[in-house]
Length: 283
Image (cartoon, rainbow, N blue to C red; front, side, top):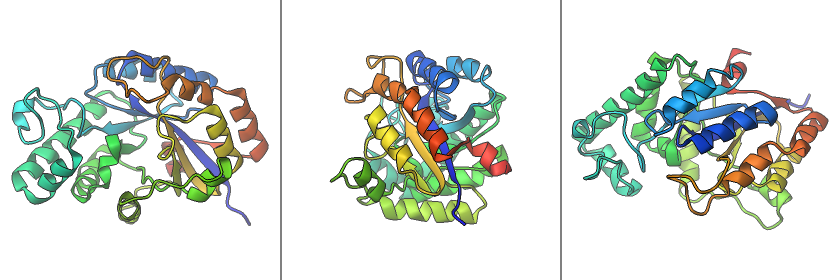
């Protein structure tokens, strides 16, 4: 018997800006979005939480930010993680090396991750899943801290960014998956999390076309969706020019993809079950 197709459709960067939050609300209420990953220390976090409380079927998870953003803790408490302006550093390689080798940095990292989990818990929302900005949770130190700290806050599901290149090539011939050096770490994180009892999807889409998940691409993925549990993650916003936006991301086009009636029709025709993480963990 063939395994069923379960699909989780996630919006990352929930809380980054009201333009993102509004798009999440629209895509969940009128489209195929089932989950969103909250940046608890971002400028629009309070607005995101207020909107989430009106959407009980939206699975809201924690989008840990440890690079290119603002910390939850005062910068003076984590001096080795931030720059002179109190922002997380942007050099992931250097930050990752220091997190692995320097005990002082690891202590500060633990404190910041704990603070972000605690800030999420303070919202009163049920923790649907955990992932990290720029997929920094592939770092073994960060992954270990997520498991250690997260279990006290109800961690049940997480993302391992493993994208099937064969499906991408079916959607757009000649396309290849973005594997590089991250694939072995993603497989290690998936195994490590699953061994700890954390649910991880079988495959993920959103890496190769990050910021460019057009309607044609999303619908193509849906037509060729593999069996098992799939997460498709996106970056919608109601317009492209908001404070903190990535200059090359087509945010509004991604919102249009999530609300395209063709996507809903394909999901119905293919017998795909739309879910969030907490529903699948409970089943």
